[in-house]
Image 1 (cartoon, rainbow, N blue to C red):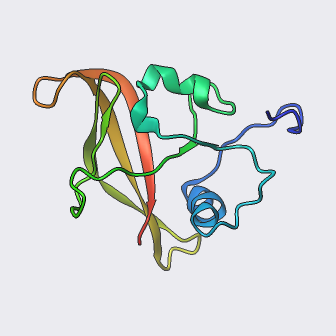
Image 2: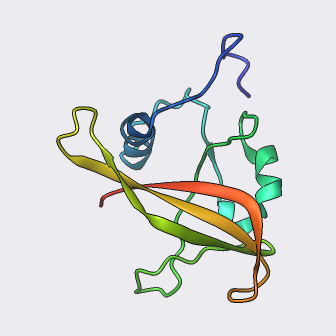
Image 3: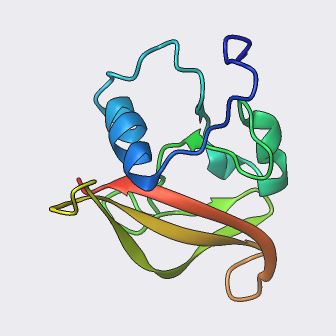
Length: 135
């Protein structure tokens, strides 16, 4: 899929680059179609150990665009059930500031995968970072 990438290519974007160069352009439909770097999937349909095979590339770290599901149709609570478990938010939202630090351009949230059902789930080593625009 990515045979056009040069040898030694590494995808190591900053938080600001993920928001400005990828997520904002994806949302506004201005992401160049030949940028086959971040795969589009519904990651909540899969277990985390199945995700590496869905990525365009990566070792130990993979990137995806995924729609955010809502627990209730008119609510704000996210539904993070996935595969054989669920993603549980941990810590607080980390604001992502513009390069000059003058304004907040998005937020980053850490999530940990638990096998099983909420309240009785078993914590795993799988960690996901969710990036969102402010809107």
